[in-house]
Structures are given as C-alpha cells and as structure tokens.
Length: 258
Image (cartoon, rainbow, N blue to C red; front, side):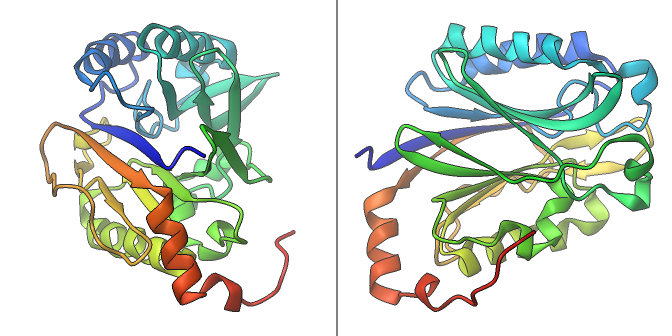
C-alpha cells in the first residue's frame, strides 16, 4: 500500500484566451516543480481562463490531452487540470487526469456557473470521476462544484478531493470556508487550486490555493495574490487512523446520488 502521496499545485496567472501562451507558461512552471512529486495540479480552464467564448477558443479535446500526455511523460508525473474543449461538436469544461504512461481519466464539470452563462455554452457533466492512482482514490471536482456538498459526498470511496478553479476575489471567503468544510464533512484530504491576476472580463483573482486534512487543518502555506508552487504530502495511514478512531463516515446518512 502506498501510504504517502505528494501533490503539487501551481498557482499562477493565465493568459486570456491564448492556449499556446498558456501551454508554454506551464511547461516552464512544470520544470520548476519538485522532481519527486506524484501529482501536479493545473487550474480550471488552464489554456484560456474562464471564458465563455468557446466558439473561438475551444480546442479539440485530443489537442489538450496530447499536450498533457507529453508533459506527464516528460516529467514522469500525473497531471490534472481542466480545459475548454470541443468534442464531437459540443463544448465542455473538462478536467483531465493523465498518468505518466498516457492512461487518462476525464470529468466533465457537473455544476455549470449559471451566473456567467456557462450552462448556455458548455455541456453539463453527469458522472463523478474517482481516479485510482498509486493506490490512492482521488475525486475530481471543478470550481462551482465546491458549493454543492452532495456531489462531493464521500461514500467511503475516496481519500482526497481535488478542486481546480477560477474563483474570483469578491467571493474568496466562501472558497476558504467551503474547501475546509468539504474536508471535514467527508473525512478526506481536500486540495483546491485557484488562479491569481485579472482576467479578460476584468475580474480579479487572489489565489488562496489550499490543502486541508480530514479534521480541517491547513497543510499548505497561505498564498494570496502571488505566484506559488507548493507540494503537500498526504498520508494514508494517518487518514485511516482518524476515520477508524472517530467513525464519522460510518454514521453518514444513507442515500444514493442519481
């Protein structure tokens, strides 16, 4: 059993609607990450920023996937993050999880951000994605999903939640609270990656990327409004010890998500 998992997140600014510039930027950032990390997290819509201009900027899903496979192979690391993609004529905010050997998983964002009209442009996802990697089970979620605890509900089927986001400054207090809450209520690790800077719609972002353990203790440094690459170490033995000692997951309400 692999007891520890090193997860690195890259908090950075994105180039608005410029996939090539963003790929070049992240190639440099990936080279700065620790060589012994297991998983590297990229932000939501890491090729474009949170844009609704999919018709002009969405790339075929294979283009994004191919680049991620190349980077995962080059750095011998699993790579995850979401991107604006086109697949069979439809647009998706799709999160990929790509292993070093090229094997991949995908998750289409379930909760589309109606305030920005995301639901009018992108297809809604309907299935959760729990990735098994190095004997760890990781539940993939995207931004607005964070506000909906039922969708993240742990049925004792994952060890960690991973959220990627473009979460604006004006609501960053909610981001802080909800990341911690998702960790506590699900007795799991919870890692959330947000961006910094100002996007093409003049919305400011201030980071606050964080990682929490199953009791809501922050494992990461506080990174407001600055570039940051941070690695956190998840420990399965201590997670199981907490779950067995406290038994909170055993007492969960019994219902199924349709």
